[in-house]
Image (tube, rainbow, N blue to C red; front, side):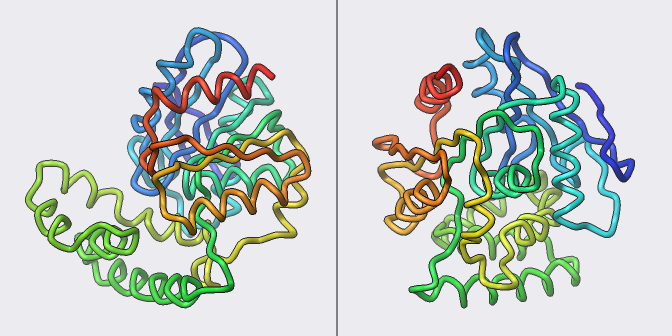
Length: 262
């Protein structure tokens, strides 16, 4: 484990794997730096991959008050530790954080995004995102971390019966420890305003970009990936057949390697 320090002094823990041009992995909700370890191992022959605990997770600090700007500064600190510039891969809300960082002008050389979960203004997802943000805020303020986890899991489509079973699983306490960071992902997504796609922001990202989705993912998520790719000035889109939002590292790795080598 390495430690870097963000602009506000927050400790950010990261792991460095492999050798070659740098790639920073930005995880999504309930991910810590271990979530990217398998992908890092598959890319290690050609790339130095940095996976890190976003603030509030794992071995990283959690300086308050939270803001998305501080998370962007965290990413900037990791990129600086990678050598001053790096390619960045983000998944889910981590993809949105990476996009926001690129739009802010971080020294990102290439950008790969897996299923950034923006919502469309043409369905009820905007209303549901606002309701989720409100309920999540109340649950976390009341210290009901388990209920906050359940809210998130059912919100992303997990059956309630499966969530009830998970509450008794050995992994549940570790997930509960990460539950407060669900509010951070909600802020990154701007759920309070509906989590709508920030088209003007996306259009400011001019680095070469690859937007991926899974062929077995919901239609709205795949449509969102195509729309993001179309808005990016140097964006391309690709579907990974048979994959869901929980993409398999062995399927993702060669696609990322090809994009990074282009």
